[in-house]
Length: 172
Length: 156
Image (cartoon, rainbow over all chains, first blue to last red; front, side, top):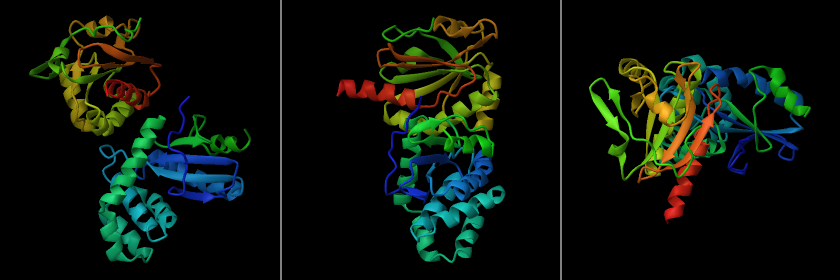
């Protein structure tokens, strides 16, 4: 059984209750259709169980398969530096079918980000290293595709692309 | 039986492109990751190789080259590799079919394909780690990375 090698820390992007007994980590790729499918399930899970769960999103862009995945990950991280990671994260998944540099810039404008700062951060080595660090930590933890979930550190292999299979973890 | 650690890796001489062959002995002095898989184009293999394609930097940082290997022909490999933008060679264990897979102990006689199996081979051509995965499951890269770490730390 694969285990999470990089512990959840303050540097992570989180939603839900930081003191929750259940911590769910997703390794995801913004251009992966399976992650797009899981996106509303996660939101529903948080709506229903927000007090009982902490959700963490980490980047796992497969760049050769998904040419816009890395730039989307960087755009979300760059928005995060202006306090709007989750807003950008949501909008990217909502526009998954039409991801491009232009779309991402447009989304950043819609969020009323400081565009000068955004375009600098978007290309920064620092954010690139962060995304690559997510990817490497995922690989070493046994992520073999996206989305891969970890529940309290153990890879959650019961997810089968239904909400119910995700919700199951709240009952275990 | 899958070949186990401390066994010399059987050499091979297989087409990597329509006009180029590769031998395992070409890689002496380097570490080699040999990734056997059942078939080009099948869903799990493609996901696995797509993952390794993104992991090449980490493999190379650890001093290792990746070679994919299946019973598909050199022309099939070429089309598959171009379609998926792979940056590592795919070897054709095509004639006699599966001969190398048989030597490594991971040939599936029923299906006429290699099983999904991984080998990490050291600079002297000795197998240091091997893993036979269920055919339908993508084994990921963590086992390979751990094996390479152990090899590299053992020498420091």
